[in-house]
Every structure is written in C-alpha cells, then in structure tokens.
Length: 70
Image (tube, rainbow, N blue to C red; front, side, top):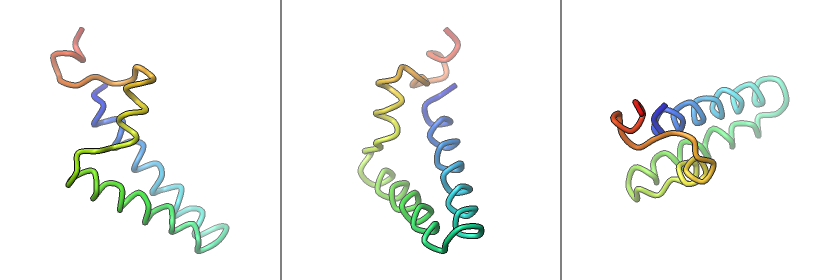
C-alpha cells in the first residue's frame, strides 16, 4: 500500500475518532479534527508530514506504484 493511502486512512480515522469523542464525550474532541485539518493543509504547502516520516521509519508503505508491486 502506498504511503499516501496510509496517511489518508490515518487522517480519516482520526477525524472519525474526533467526531465520536465530540458527540459522546466532550465537544473538545473537535480539537482533534481541527488538528488533523490544519496538519493536512500545512503538509500540502510545505511537503512536511510527520505521519509520513513515522511510516517510513516503521517500514510501512512505499513511494510509487512500481515500488508497491515488488
């Protein structure tokens, strides 16, 4: 699986978690959703993504489609 797909899964999971926390626990759970959104926006402008660095260190994901087929 490509690293980009893993990041999308992670971001989507955190958004769903934040919404669930806001609904069932406290409205402060929406801060998690805001954090994810801001992080996605800044990574689009800067190219810096902490999740991508963590996935690379764990050896998860691959860069391109050709690398994924190996």
